[in-house]
Length: 320
Image 1 (cartoon, rainbow, N blue to C red):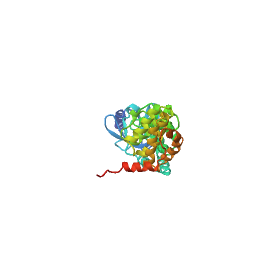
Image 2: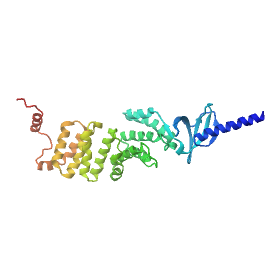
Image 3: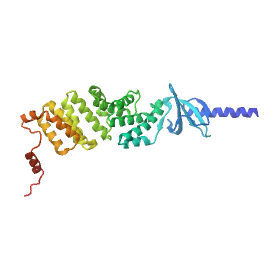
Image 4: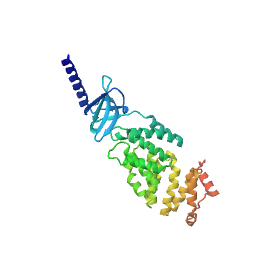
C-alpha cells in the first residue's frame, strides 16, 4: 500500500514538472483559490492558448496562476521572453474614451483607465499588454480638456520605456503636440516625426501638422510653418474643424514673411467661409495691427460693398 502511494506521488510530481516545463518555468504550488489579476488569455510560443492570472513580477520572472485540467491552479514563474502574447478583446473603457464628449464623461472614463493601467503596469512590457494603451487614452482625454501638462507626463512615461509597442510612436507624437502647446518648440520638433504617423488616424495627422506649424512659427521658420498649416486645409479641411484654425494661424507666417497679398487673401477667405468661427474672431484682432501695412500695398482689410458685389458676380453663371 505504501509503495502504491509513493508511486502515485512520483507520477503527480512528474506530471507537474511536464506542465511547468511546457510553460517555460518552474513549478511552485497548487492553489484552489483564484488570486492575482485576470484571468487573461495567453497565446504561448507554440500557438496554444491558456487562461492565466498575473500574480507578481520579481526581477526577470513573471509569476502567473494557470488552471490545470483538474480545475486546480498552478503557480509558475516565467521569463518575459518566454511569455508569448497576451490577447485582449476590445475594452469597454477604451470604447468609452473615444465616445466621451464632455469633461464629466471624460473624467469618469479616466478613472476606469487608471484602474486598468495601475493593475497591469508591472507587466506593461509584455507583448500584447494594454497598460500603455490605457495610459495613452487617459493622456489623450486630458489633452482634449486642455490639460497639456498632465497629458505630457503620461505621454513622456510611455515614450521613455525601453521597449517598443504599437502605442509608443503615437505617444511620442502626442508628446510633441503637448510640448508645442506648452511652448517647448525645440523639444516638440524632436517628437513630431511624420514617418511615425499612421495613415488611418486623420485626427492625429491634422493635430501633428498644426503642432509643427506652431513650433516652426515660433522658431521663425515661416516657410515650413506655412506648409504644415496649409496641409490640412488642402487635404483634410473637415477633420476637427481644422480649416479655420489653420487659416487663422498661417496669418502669422505671412506677416513674418511680409507676404501681404497672401495675408489679405487668407484673411478674406476666413471672413467669407467661417465668419462666426472663434478662430476668425482671433484673426480679426491679429490682422487689425497690420491694417496700415496692407493699405500701403493697396489692400483693404475689411470687405467693402464693391468687394461683395464682385464676389457675387464671380459666382454667377453667364447666360447668353
